[in-house]
Image 1 (tube, rainbow, N blue to C red):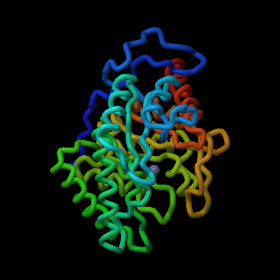
Image 2 (image 1 turned 180 degrees about the horizontal axis):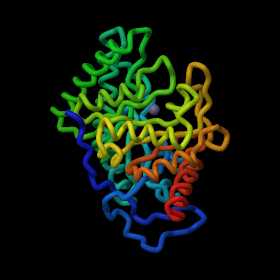
Image 3 (image 1 turned 45 degrees about the vertical axis):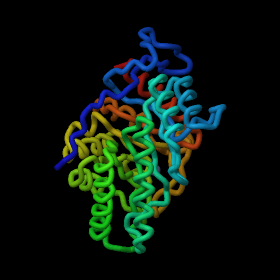
Length: 315
Ligand SMILES: [Zn+2]
């Protein structure tokens, strides 16, 4: 069964300033006021660089101060957080209206040879999903697997089966979060758009985390308005419009070579056509979360958000 991606009444669109220079929107709603999301939220992968207090709650406060709409909690080394801390995080997210997502540890390979490595991978994903749920986050991005030279079909089946076990455990624990395998940027990594769309169709509560920078890094293409539109159209064709009404996107500038991604860059230092990218998202009326993974984090998140609002206003 394909995923039904309901509009879950994502918080925000709360009238936070749309840019640092334009000032506050006139129709400011009280912080924490829940409203059906009417567009895209932009935010940082982890706490903004300019966060004074180095904690997730501190990062949420800074995201709100900057006028951004969301933040991804980066559990990239290990997923650990107690329930008491999660409560504090959840409260600051509700109070500020900042929408949260989570990123699972990098050390996940659902195609690992050794059963204990598979189990450890599954546990890292499970633990990230539990923490996300305590924090009120509804979407968990993760890097699913490496091919390790195996045929892609075989890897797909391994990933699917092991992911299914994770989903079953989450169902038993009544943890309701979207599990989002990420579109990856290297040829050694499982996670093409079609692989993610197949998994999303076959498994409940699975949807893609679409990393447009990774997609571009795979082959140097997918970097024009028409190509961005064709990606969105493909997602809609296979998963339905709901997938575009609750999207989870990663983006950054990117450096790449023959084997794909080399490293993330700031937008202005890369060839990524971010204005065309934002224009495509706007024209397709995509709604959801855009997490910026450029090294300057909030710098590019604000750049993208300002571009989006500029295009909306001049439409
Ligand atoms: Zn990632």
